[in-house]
Image (cartoon, rainbow, N blue to C red; front, side, top):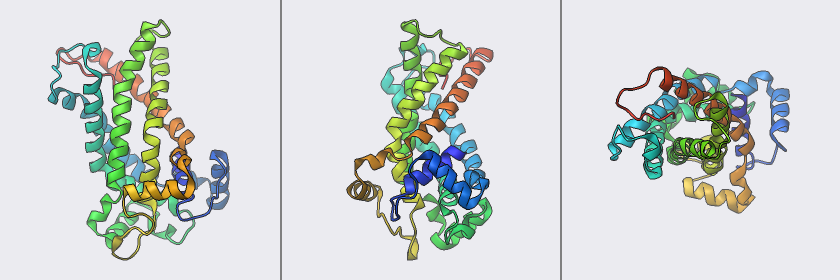
Length: 281
C-alpha cells in the first residue's frame, strides 16, 4: 500500500502544481512529516475492495476468455499462441477495470487529498463515495475509466501472456526449473518489470485524470480527455513524465506477481483440473 501511495503522488506532481518530491524516498519522508505515518496508508479501504474485485476478475476471467476466442481447453499450455494469451489477458483486465473503477477512483482521491482543501471529503470509503456521488453524480464514479481500461488491458495482457513465455525461455536455457519457487520467483520478477514498463505511461494518465480537480458540473479542470492529458503532460513536462512513479510501480507489481504466481502454481499442482489448460496466471 505505501508504494501505491508514493507512486500516485509522484505521478500527480507537475499536474497543475509545482514539483514537491525529488524521488521515492523524499516523497515518503515529506508525506510522513506532513501527515503522519498514516499518510502511507491513505486509500487502503477502497484499495482492498478494489483488489478483491479487480484482482479476482482479472485472473478468473482469463482462461474462460482465452477459450472463448478459440483455444481448446485441452490444448497444452506451451502450444497456446502468444496472441491468444495477450488478447485474453487484455480482455480480462478491461472487464475487471470497468467493474472496479469506482474503487480505483476513490483510492486515488484519498491518496492525493493529503492535507489539502479536499482532505475532509475523502477520509473514508463511505464518506468519499457520498461526496463523489453528491458532487459529480453516479456516473462520476467512472471518471477516468478510459485510461484505467487501457492501463488494465496493457498490464493484464503483458503480465498474463509474458509469464509463461518468460518461464519457458528461462527453463529452456537451463536457468530455472519450472514449478520450483526459485523458477517462479525469477519469472515473476521479469514479468513484473515488463508489465510495469508497458503500463506505467497509462498509469500516469489514469492517476492524473482521476486525481485532477473537478469544476462545476463534474468537469475536469486540467484535462478534458485521456489524449488531452497525455499531450498536455508531455508538452509541459517532457516525455519522461510518462515514467513518473516507475520504481514504486515495479516495486509494487513484482512482489504481487511473485505471490500470485506462486499461489497459482501451488493451486494447479494441488488441485489439477482433469480437462483444462488453466494457466498459472
